[in-house]
Length: 162
Image (cartoon, rainbow, N blue to C red; front, side):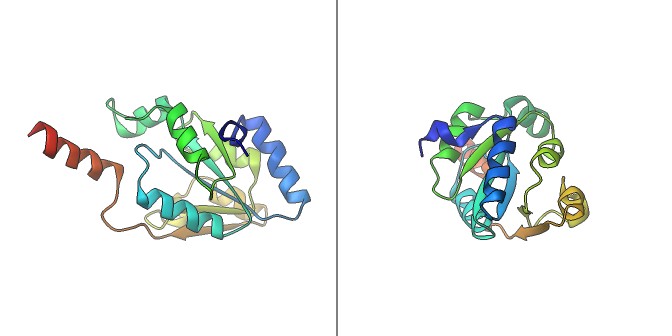
């Protein structure tokens, strides 16, 4: 599948999830900013994919990342982040959302399994109630210690700016 074929509109994502469900495939949804993709992201996405058959990633738009992370973020544009995510074997589809949380897209897609990092308590995971109310599961995954986009940015600043 080409990289572009993995980059779906919200409507196309809803259609493909319905098709995957008809094929009896367990659909997994996770989301994030994925700004400066690193080994921790890759491991997280591989573990998310292992929770089911097909993985769809909700990707925060540039304006959403800026609202969440500050004026200097994202470092990498949504088009570039989407292309990199689409190149990962674990990722079957990517859908961009503009809201601060993926609540609306989760309501539209109704995945079988919602995955989030273990740093999120269940009651704070956007979309968890919706997925659970529709008979789905919510799972959390531990992160690789010490890996984050923010820590990478700090190391770059230390090396080149101080």
